[in-house]
Length: 469
Image (tube, rainbow, N blue to C red; front, side, top):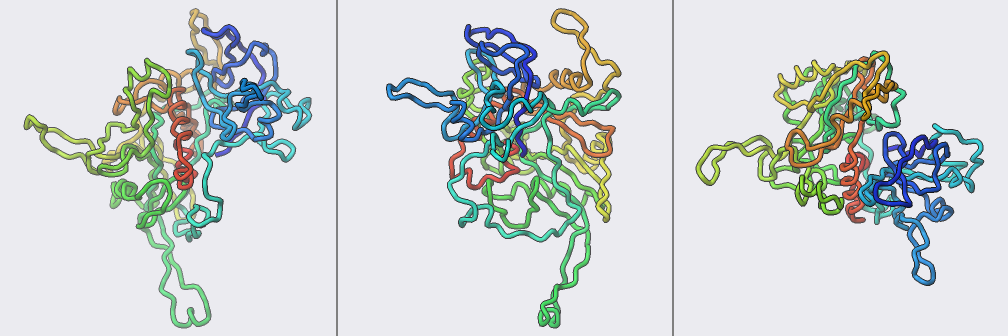
């Protein structure tokens, strides 16, 4: 969950369409509202959304809301406790992130040593920014906190965790001409992984082993194992964000008896937490976005259901409606596989291609994440701008150009809520290389959901769940 700010150079500005004292700068493809003092060519620091600024940095730069002795607003717009940066709309214009002039770091370092492209989180041993995490009421180590959980034995050494997906906008230099890129739907659910792998089993200790305090003999035996992004699940409840792991185990059973030796499936679980369960990902009141057109299109509440039904079971049900007509009730939750690997006993990993993933998922009767397009990056990529001119692009910019054709609009599965965005995977690499690109409206919804967490909810939220919100 690394969070960084970026030293940037202002390369383009345009007028705000509905505010004379504001203008719009663009950093990493994100429109950001700035004041009239900002000029093209200026250097500054760009803080992406989802970050939190340190208390002293905010104090030095007068960034949090405060009033003088007469009750007049004299500070910035950040919440004085949370100090978090979130996407917002101001008079009809989007603002994604925060831009400050390079002088904001004068009290922390020699700004003459900085250059565009540098990243910032800690400067001279002092924290400037970090990933925003909702405040917790319990202190680490106190009863009930996650840090008190006993460490589990690693019973599956080759059961590798999910690969962290970095933001596309900050990794455009990773793409090259000739790269084969697949674009798929970014789905808003909770991560799951299930494998049929060699598991470490422990024999019962003999009398002499107990007497001399020696460990029992262990050996490897193939078996099914399942987990979240980072945690291996046992038969009981692991504690944390969800009330029960039943829905996770129910989804994992879709693979039992079907995976080949060494196969691991990585997938997203979407919908609801079992029959009559709460949504897997939090609901948000659409009115809080303050966009009438958005509420008109998607209703009063966003529920990331992906066509699942809260009244359904783990499998679709045939039933009859009030008129006696046969109909099907969708399942309460569903899985969508986006990655599969084959791992040998030495831990060597072979990535499945999209075609192999589709073939195996068809055999097993499970879903694959929807694909938008697969393309090859041209040697000299170009696009046609709004004025009809041919514009040259870098390989990374060409990928963004492609992605932006698909990252916005209704979810293509259930069609009742906004889509989260797009995942771009480079297929011609030896490892699993993927980047994500989220749309603005989803970012706003996600930040509202995180912002509204109570301290009690924050106590139970796991790191991998927070990354998914």
